[in-house]
Image 1 (tube, rainbow, N blue to C red):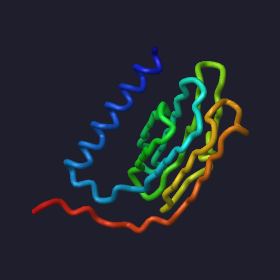
Image 2 (image 1 turned 135 degrees about the vertical axis):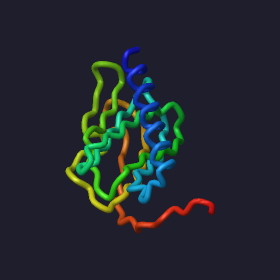
Image 3 (image 1 turned 180 degrees about the vertical axis):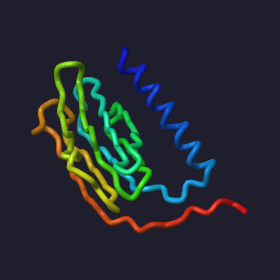
Length: 147
């Protein structure tokens, strides 16, 4: 129950942050982590906590994904050219936890976005599913508002 409250506050803070960035004409949207799932089955009610941090500004962006359907599409945004995945944790209640889920916690990532594909049977057994992680160079572009 406490986790749900924390996640709601984190999501609200993220929304307010993005509104502020948009209002100020955020010059560069940063990198993206695109996540596609195509599970055969999902055991229990897992939650995936993904936390990104900008090493320059120390800005933290938490994301909480709840796989309830076999097919999902999610996007996590960073706010800079460089970011760190500080937490990637899949949990099934208090006892079944996979830390560094998909091996994303791996130092500073610069000018790279991820395309993550999850398949198989999502369960606490790491041999029952597959994480495919493709890193690719991002080309900076400018988003221009209407004049």
